[in-house]
Image (cartoon, rainbow, N blue to C red; front, side, top):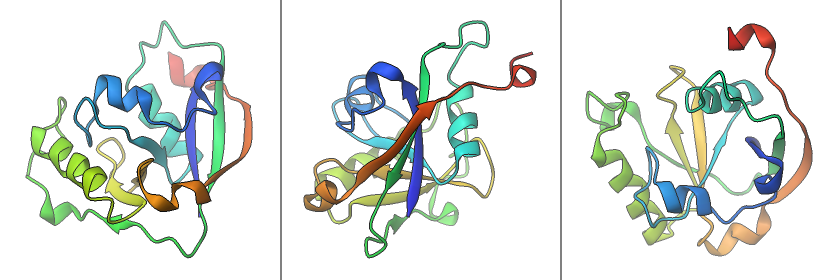
Length: 152
């Protein structure tokens, strides 16, 4: 499986989950390390865009392609199991509890979660504390920029 992550040049090779640990996220509480990735480059782009001010898009973005061995299957979070307001922003706190508990339990390396931004698309969370974490690899990074039409 290949997943994608967009970050500033300084952080593109950092797979510690420190950003999520410092700031928290939809699927993790502050203090919990998680690596957020997307199943496609397009979803990774949209997921990043919703968190940026369009007037301040970093010029040093890169996209990483991360390879995960096919034998590793994700634990899946199904939409029907989530609260009705799961797509809200800010997100309901139950989502961060779900992800944080998943990290602590280390039952799986990957958690497949629905995107709140693009319906029927999925993000893949990676647990850096899981014993299989060493099996993932960044196989490619390249400079990344958004088409100007997305920034109007």
